[in-house]
Length: 442
Image (cartoon, rainbow, N blue to C red; front, side, top):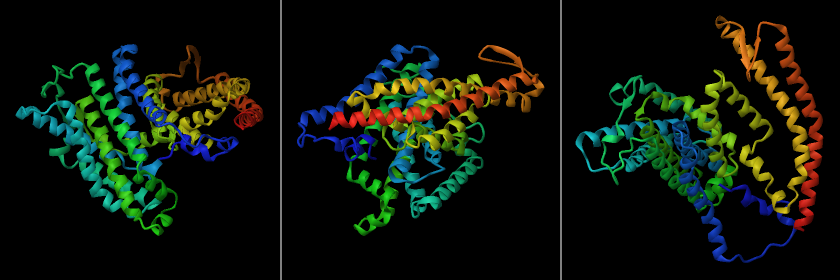
């Protein structure tokens, strides 16, 4: 998939001035290697900075979700295939990995735990070939509906085939009973984190490399205009199924990492909810860039863990965030950040700061009002049996009284109107900074 950085040279900022026609090979190689070295450094240093058990667990979940989101982006962002059943390959990878771990532990086979994600990857690839041969014959809405049907079929089958899926209890394993490597038992969470981090980095590098191959470019072409690809002599369905199988393989690796982390695989891994989470993460981060799903995976995991501790309706906030991203920022969080790249390079981004600060206050008022209305409505409609007394940010009040509702509504409406009033100022500042950047780059 083409990053925005790759698209930028054909845009307005790139046309502002001449570019060197020849780039030293050493500089190009350093530009490709340095981001991955920085990513590896972050993965190594993160547990040294965030040392609590909760932080280690959260970072492990982030690594798993990064692999899962990047695999989904191979379908949606790169090839244009909207799948509602990507969790099938994630879940099957997890189940085959758990069974493989039990077989290895029972028979004392000399296979270490770090190789187990290969089992999940092979399982995802095998089922990707099986289901992809059917679903990739068509694209668009038909593909989406077929993927949903396959997801429901496998999810229903998991409740029937108890010998393999274990019913509602699932299948458990013990990662500490496998062959030790360098005396690592993988009992402590820190060891599991580093195992996940290594596989996350390997998978991310592999998926990024695929996007830079002719196959990756053909996937982009099939996404944009499959008829023209066919006129050029390529078969769109063959390209789709190749991308589908590779995506399923990496999803299987993510499922294997989840099985290793939790030491269990159950039917929840296969459900539509899991497919919805990866869809949310990919869209929120941004499907227009390779880094977008990574950002989305980190944000979604962080919100899942933190919001679930703060409110029972955290899934509603996810839905609202998804709607807001689709409506106002189709490029996702990463797309919004990369929009400022040319301004930062030209040194004109600071001109946006006053306008952004001006819009921050109304936005926070709007957000506070909406959150208060949602929490009070949930208390009155769902949790009324627990009483109407509640508190937000440490402020106690009675949701049965009219005053809290009036205050929340005033914050929401007032913040929304004020934000609408300052948006022209933000747009004017953006155009001013953009024009100044064009002049500097000319």
